[in-house]
Image 1 (cartoon, one colour):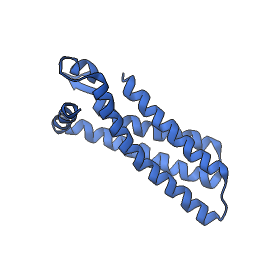
Image 2 (spheres, one colour):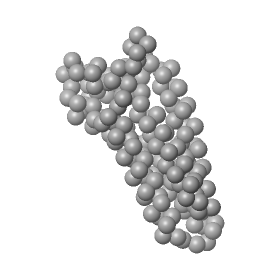
Image 3 (cartoon, helix red, strand yellow):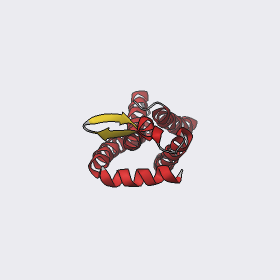
Image 4 (spheres, one colour):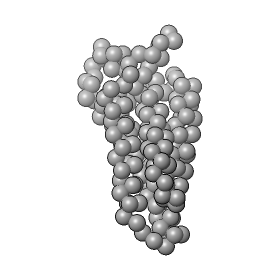
Length: 153
């Protein structure tokens, strides 16, 4: 796993522009998704929940994307194809990518839970739907990240 992390550090330094562009997109979708999550708590509209799922899912995908696709000579190459000649196993690559996903999901989870606490404090009422909604958002977003790790295109 250390070899994969070293490769990631070198690749991130070499392709800093791509990482910057993916980070900008990630934060745009993240802010939109967190705002829609907050509005779902306040308004209770189900279509906002769907938009929040989509935005947060895209932020996770854009967070993982630079670690799964390598640009070489203007073409996108799957990271698994590039590293197949290296002495690393595919499972090690998955574990490292899952660690990146876990870090990112921890940050999203903390913000979403804080949003729910703020809404409960200001509205003065607790709804069981809000708790289920938080769990649902986090599970769906986490699953989109796992799918992105296992099946990068």
